Amino acid sequence: MRLEDFVAELQQSVINENSKIYKEFFNNTTVEQATDPYWKNALKWFNALPDNQHDVFFAIIQQIMVDTISNVLGILDDMSECADTDS
Image 1 (cartoon, one colour):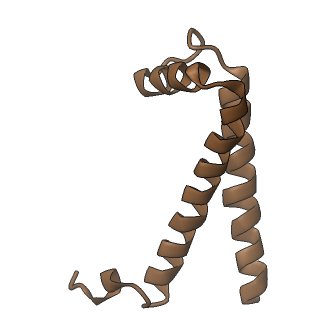
Image 2 (cartoon, rainbow, N blue to C red; image 1 turned 180 degrees about the horizontal axis):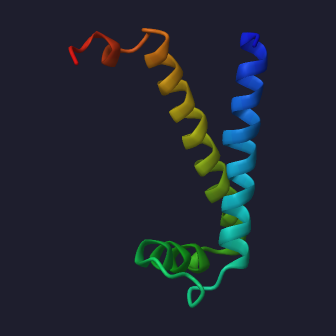
């Protein structure tokens, strides 16, 4: 697989698909439907945001995913300080 194809696949499967999952969850799940205490609290917090802040919230989640992928690829590419630690 070419590097460009790998990066495109990461973007599609991790960023795009997970962004869609988060949006669907937060927009279509009630607090009562959530079973995990973490998600119940997250939904309560999200629902307390003004509607015009929901897009900002999803943009933050997307940026976190991009940063995380970048960090993991940096480690794999020996570009991170973590790669210099002894295991």
